[in-house]
Length: 368
Image (tube, rainbow, N blue to C red):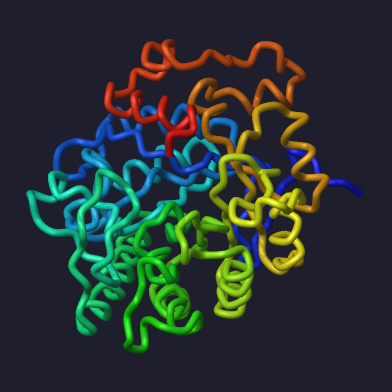
């Protein structure tokens, strides 16, 4: 029997999604100064929670020095719990799971966003981006402190009532930087061999699962988002990612979530290969944990194609930005009513800050 968009999905720990639709994490930079949840945040997510099974929020920084976006969520301090709790409750009241994505930007942090300070990263290697600076390498004790910052952020998410957290190991942020041979040239136990480079993510997942077991008062999900490849040389290859997937599953991750611009794209590195890399990812996961695919899924037909490829969940970004009722309209056979406006009309419809709209345009036009 095939998968359908409106099927319920039950995770191994008993957490239930009412359908297979996930709202992809998108940072809208609408928070109050200092990373406090705003009413605009709550209204935005509440509107889109009415039809989907799960919302993954825009990323919340676990350390003020890890903030890569102005006016974005903070989960770095206890005084943020109250606002995050209101956000989680607003999402859950509409029938959706609330998942808080957490991250540290590492070398992708702009000094201007963190008061002119120097960003930190696994190694003092600049990203191949015109807008970044050379970071300071974390000391060995600081790596352990960074691990603790992630764990404390997870604990705050539990205290705020979220249904889970998603570790942001994609888009060249800190977790990915530890695994990348481009950004991690350490010679201690956190760098060097692929196994050492994935040690931070593996250890974090293992410790987070233990924390959840000890502290969670209800079933709580731990997810991990990853980018399958890097364009840097040396950089993460698909083979590297498949090895990381294996270790994340072995260490108890509850779900995996890819980050790609097109779900059916072929390799960025092996340009002579035409097979979608998604096929190898799905084969490696082998139904052991739920997997969320994303990337240029716009219509119900696009979504069904993903489900037919033995992928249990799909995430929508732009379609839910443009039309919060995407799921309802597809389910009711009203797909012709889905809003599909583009670019210049975004700001009027979404009522979002100008800076975010400009960044979204760049993303949609492939500048990232």
